[in-house]
Image (cartoon, rainbow, N blue to C red):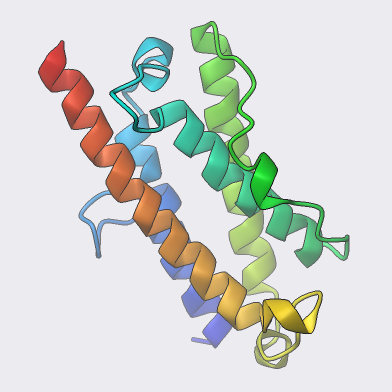
Length: 157
């Protein structure tokens, strides 16, 4: 299996369908979360909806670059979640995450090994490989947060 295919598999595992590292994934954790739970604030923690938006923001930003576009994402906007006031809006956010994640994995699978060693947009961002590995690690980090916040919400209610 090529390196891009292995990375795509790891990415799918954390977001869409795996259980190997954390025994869960984003889709598994978020499938039964209601919009009210997703927007419930626990102390100073981010909400599940904010973390979902945040992770999709970065995935979508990398997809743009993978498709030949510019890197438009900025850290300062990565938590600018539009207000969610219904189950439909929550489900739209989830569907965006699933669609962007599927696109990310598919585009990654189509990359060559040599592309992974290329500079990602600008030398200050290092290589494609470093950014893809970083995305996978970023996803696991926030998956852990979502899992714990979900438990806190269910415990309090």
